[in-house]
Amino acid sequence: MKIIFTIIAILTSPALLWASEGSTVAAAVDFTSSVYGYLGVMLFVLAYSLVPLENSIHLRKSKPVILAAGIIWILVALAYNTIGDTHTAHEAIKHSLLEYAELFLFLLAAMTYINALEERNVFQALRVYLVSQGYSLRKIFWITGALAFVISPIADNLTTALLMGAVVMAVGAGNKKFVALACINIVVAANAGGAFSPFGDITTLMVWQKGKVAFGEFFAIFIPSLINWLIPAVFMNFAIENANPAANDEKIKLKFGALRIMFLFLATIFTAVSFHNFLHLPPAAGMMLGLGYLGIFSFYVKKVEGREGKYDSILGQRPHEDLHPLYPLINRKKGLFKFIQDYPDPTFVIDNDHLVTHWNTAMEKLSNVEAKDVIGTRRHWFPFYKRERLILADLVLENFSKEQIGKHYNGHHRALPNIQHAYETAAFFPDLSDEGKWLSISAAPIKDETGGVIGVVETLRDYTKHKDKASQFDLMKRIARAEWDTLLFFYGVILCVGGLSEFGYLGLVSGWLYTGLGDTIANSLVGVLSAIIDNIPVMFAVLTMDPEMSHGQWLLVTLTAGTGGSMLAVGSAAGVALMGAARGTYTFGVHLKWAPVIALGYVASILCHLFINAKSF
Image (cartoon, rainbow, N blue to C red; front, side, top):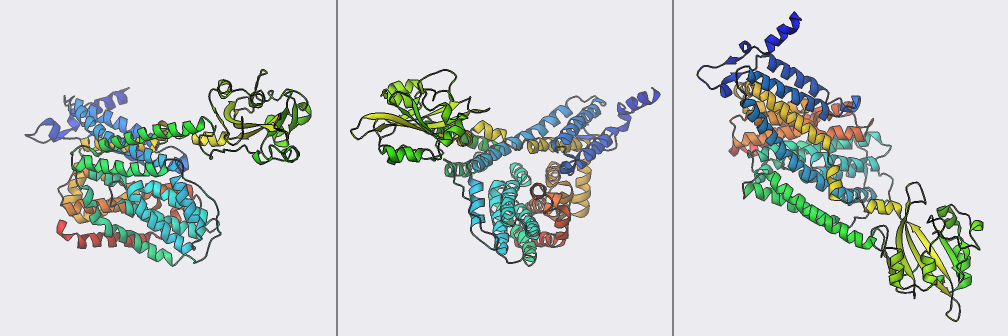
């Protein structure tokens, strides 16, 4: 008990807090030597040490940092309470929350667009196109690297790395050396490409939102970023054999609205830039307006696909057929009846008395009812309904009107124009399987030589899988598929760093780095540090310290924080993601072997920036 009381006394004692004379409490209190500060640093180090181990221990990276963030701010509040200040901690955490809110809303809108483009097959179509072109391995190496460099400024380096990684793994399946080198190249290219655009990385986004660098000014580091990628790529190029991979004939088509969503994404970027540059409003507000563009368009997509689905249960995923599937044979009895048995779609025929005369093999498989059990009976309704009722074949045979047929199928029907009194409908049948099935159904009358109706042929098609795919496009579903673990991780990081800043540690680090070592060396070390720790907390710490630097130095720290993570596989989100996607092939050790040439590109990019942008220093 004495030990417990001693610890409580120490934690609540203001004697451990030092303040400068003649200053206000909020501005002058230094908690760096307090127990609260020490505990905060230890807690942050412990929580962040678990982040690189995410794939090993299967603990999502957001969980430890969120826990650490909450406890650190408890310590901040306790520290201020010991000196009678109950206001400063409250205002400080509100500032950190505002910082996070802007980042969160911006990224949420961007991630939703990326998810929408993925759902509309944009990225899959690009991957299939590249794989199907028959390029050599060396050419694929350069194409995927170049595309990673070009796409990452818009789609962010993580998404780009996963997309291009899928390409090289599809092309180089079985060639581990090529896949590993191509993944390293993609990581370096994606990080370098993301460095010269506010949309390319979280660090550049934070610099832009803070107003340290204007949107157009990021392009001043385009050439240094390019050099950062090209130098290691040239070295790795000679290690790749110039062989041709096996051809791939896979085909993927863009879904309805894909190109218009791409246009809306570009319009959203323009809106965010305009909010920042012309209206002097947060870019996040512009991104959320752009999310509104997508929301309205998604409503239109659902309406269009829904209208097609009114007649076709798969929501427009196949073109309408204006002919019955068996149209060429319908009025040729011998040809029709001979063909039905082996026809791939489930098909049956009823005569003028509604008796089943044909029940093909595909129909047996769909209905789980054998032909011998149904032929000669009127039980063709049995596989689909619990009670006897007229189905489409019966309605056509009885010459029901279009309106009467509509009452039986809730208006989900249409007339087939090339056959008199033939109809197509769509319906869901819950008893056909454990999950039920969506069927598209066509029924047409069979006539004799004199034109008299002697029966009806009905053909069914199972489009359950297609309907499930078609029904996935919903804005709320796209939002739900955002990288929530990543977004919550950013929350933890921002609040942890904000709390440590309140203790005064960032002020100490800023003085040591930017006053003791100088801006250029300090900003170069930021990149090296980002390869070990991760560039997001490092950049947020720099922005929180807010050292007095020239415009050229802010560009330099943007370049180094964005590209420094390429030196290690765990130094960037792109590298960590690809290690998971190409598990066992692209590894930390493989990447480490090429770290010297990546570091050479890093140094060369810094020297290039110091030379071509000398006037900005």
